[in-house]
Image (cartoon, rainbow, N blue to C red; front, side):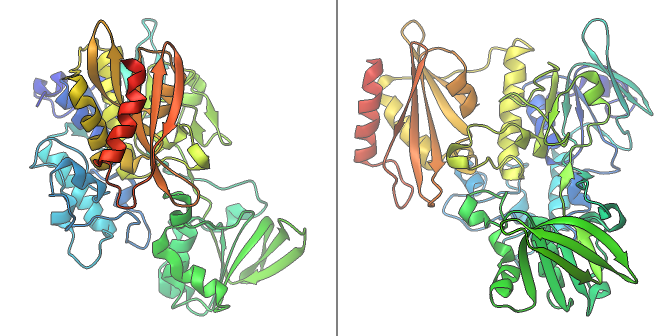
Length: 504
């Protein structure tokens, strides 16, 4: 495992100095990037404002239980690549001592890990992978030197690098410009459940954090009202963790049973102090009806933004009211080359959003693959490495693609976002190019190639899709879905053969 050059100077891990790459953060995104840099022998420094690894999982979710599943017993063997499909919380490694850590850490009481278990999972990975993280070293400033390198300021000194990777999470509580919302606690400031006993609780928002709060307060609150302009959608409907996770169904059910929970599709216009409580003034999204609700407690479950610091002043473009950086398919700033993002921030690269369904890049089981693709991209395009591109025979091509569609965890966990690419050039033969963002394959000129991915429909069907690039033009071919998700059969092989005949 390659060590960062500066860490060998005997002055502790990642001391200030010059590095090819500087990684900022110590959450799952940062740890995965560091491990991939080690695997490819690219020198780096890793710094974090936190005192230990874990990122936001050191504190959140408030009520402990995660939304992401790990199944200790699945049809795939632990440490085998297909098992990643069923373990959404472990980071990736080719070393069995480091891969699939979460099942051995969980206590078995739930397939959803607790927050402390997730923190322990990440700390164990950082220790065993020997990530040279320098803790208690916050990134404070950024500038670009005359030679184009970036200079990151910290209390310990300056770090100079060719590439900076920010894996700092969607960690900054965000509130809209609603009058009075600054006077109520944000989700991260939610009090202990017993402090809401017998109270009428109003949450501004109906996303996962609002339903997490509602789930925890169901036994305590007298009434719970959840309001936002748009209807709440379940994750199983959206085929993504961006919707309300199915684990939070009880508040949803209670709302439909008129059992003390109300889901309102209304725009919050103002929050006003009223004695010991609040008056929340709202207007209906569809009918414009005005409503005033008297609440004993109000919680702003309005989400988070990226703590970008001075990066916008450096030239990093943003969108969504400045909450996220505008990124290329390889998670690089569209306006400041050399600044990359990893972890939950990689959701800012939207991809194709086939059928309107977003990626899973906001969760570990999605962005861990983005990190691997990102580091391979850096190695090839910036550091001039010739990465392995295994040759395939024509006879092996169809079984290989069928195998990817059936077993590849990258494709199943990042449906219609990541694809397996194989180039077919007369002068170079058939080459496995690895995993790539599908949007890059579709939108960027390149050699003749085929890309396979899996795509979900709004109705819940998952089907294989094959993208063919020939002479600069890209076509999409859709294969029939299999009810058991097995694409090794003769019918699929025939369909793939017919598609690939275009290259013969």
